[in-house]
Amino acid sequence: MPLTVTTRGGTMREILAETKRAAKTELQAGMLYWYQEFLPKHFQVGVQERYGFKPRSLELEIRKSKSGSRGRRGQDLVFSGEMERSLRSRIQIGGSSQRVWGKMPGPKHLFGRLDPSSRMPDMKAEITKTLPGEEDAVARFVSARMAKRIAEIRGTHTTVYG
Image 1 (spheres, rainbow, N blue to C red):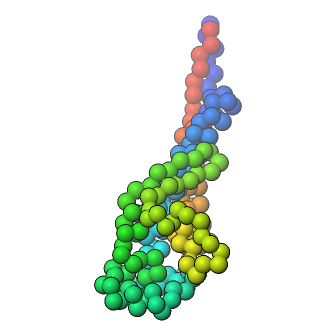
Image 2: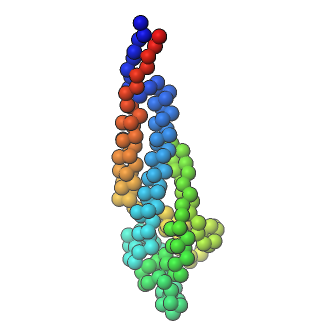
Image 3: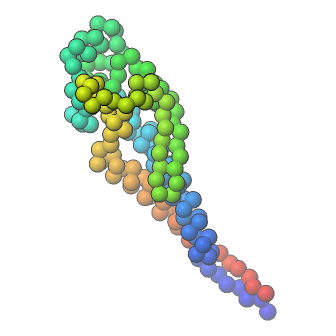
């Protein structure tokens, strides 16, 4: 006579492997969420106070207005709009079940090392700056998705022996 055993979630090894795959997928979804929801806010007017950007010089603001720059006064990360367009055009997301990263194309001046004595702001740091509220929103997004995935992983499985 066959023995039928109903279990929740399969073997411990299967559950662990599926949970790691789910964590990787959901962390990457969290990076995409940040990219779509919070990166655009870095290019808005008046974000200097919100993100703590280094004040721009009056000289730069004058150059912006004389050149017909796309950036308005107080729009610190926009001069011609090239950087915003390139960063928002695409993102390459990778990582593991424990951490995630994103690569965005951008102008060459973002990829060099900044001289500490330079008056130039660290734009790379300004672009990736996150506020505690943003981090919390991404964490809630990932947690909600991960909770659904764990519930799916722990579904009922039936194994017949004999």
